[in-house]
Amino acid sequence: MVTNKNFEVIIIGGSYAGLSAAMALGRSLRKVLVIDSGKPCNRQTPHSHNFLTQDGSAPKEIATIAKQQVEKYNTISFLKDLAINGRKIPEGFKIETENGKIFTAKKLIFATGVKDMIPDIKGFSECWGISVIHCPYCHGYEHKAAKTAIMANGERAFHLASLVNNLTHDLTILTNGKMGFNETQLKKLKEHSIEIIEKEILGTEHHKGQIEKIVFKDGSKENFLASYAAIPFEQHSSLPKTLGCELTEQGHIKVDFFQQTSVNGVFACGDNASPMRSVAYAVATGNIAGAMVNKTLTDEQF
Ligand SMILES: Cc1cc2nc3c(=O)[nH]c(=O)nc-3n(C[C@H](O)[C@H](O)[C@H](O)COP(=O)(O)OP(=O)(O)OC[C@H]3O[C@@H](n4cnc5c(N)ncnc54)[C@H](O)[C@@H]3O)c2cc1C
Image (cartoon, rainbow, N blue to C red; front, side):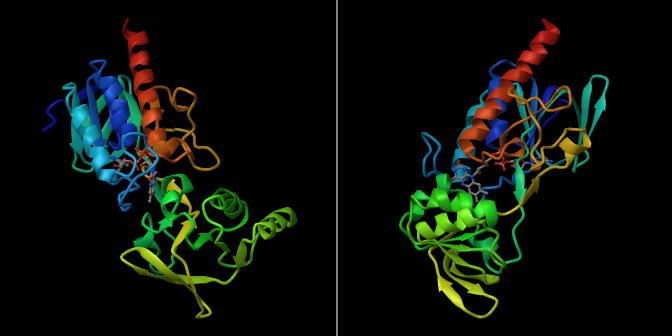
């Protein structure tokens, strides 16, 4: 149970980025509260890849080990709750949670991640992270040489196709409507024998998330064993914006090299502040945010 009300740092989001920031701060004896609502974006994927020492582990397993290691630092407190309100006060920041708890801190770290906006395609949600994948580095190797679709259009589809082409030569782009490629892109796609289907997508046929067919609105179907999808996202938490943090055009929190946002005393790390979505990047930027918050506190106190 969390009895303290006032902390040096509150970290909102206690997944990879948040726990990494907490570790750096705990090792500097900072009094920290980590508030986490327990909904990391990769929770449906059975195996996480491309993170050294944990390649192929379940996402939850990586987070559990991380939390156990951070728990050893007894200046860190954890709260399972949702931060719903935040405002600036003279001493720093006041944060309110869904369960009616109120805490203050001198500094804030947002490690809140992003929310993928699942399209209205039947079966898409069930396959997300299993056989419908967001990133070739995370799951491409496991689907190498498979008959693969790319559900995307224009630049995003072209970029994905160029990356995935090295993993499989059986590649089809599904633009779900009129294609948006320029002449040069079309020529390149043709050169690599990448087919383009413009038919609108109705849904997927799958077994426990393993895609078998993509069904089009005209009733036709195509067999696939995997599909990439470039889908939109939104900030998982609206609090950074409420507190005045500027966002980039793409919708990420604007941060400098040290993870400082546009609001003094507020830092952000992980997916919410970068398009480079990976566990490794979340851990790296969390580590930087933790160290920089500690440095800022030290500069103010020493
Ligand atoms: C389907 C899928 C599969 C993936 N597979 C891989 C992979 O194989 N390898 C890899 O390296 N990367 C993978 N990724 C990317 C990786 O999961 C992310 O880069 C990583 O989870 C980002 O960590 P994070 O801590 O920034 O955010 P998240 O892990 O998304 O965690 C954010 C946390 O903040 C909490 N939160 C949000 N708002 C609040 C609030 N207001 N109050 C309290 N808590 C809050 C959430 O509940 C959540 O626990 C995958 C992503 C997806 C979507």
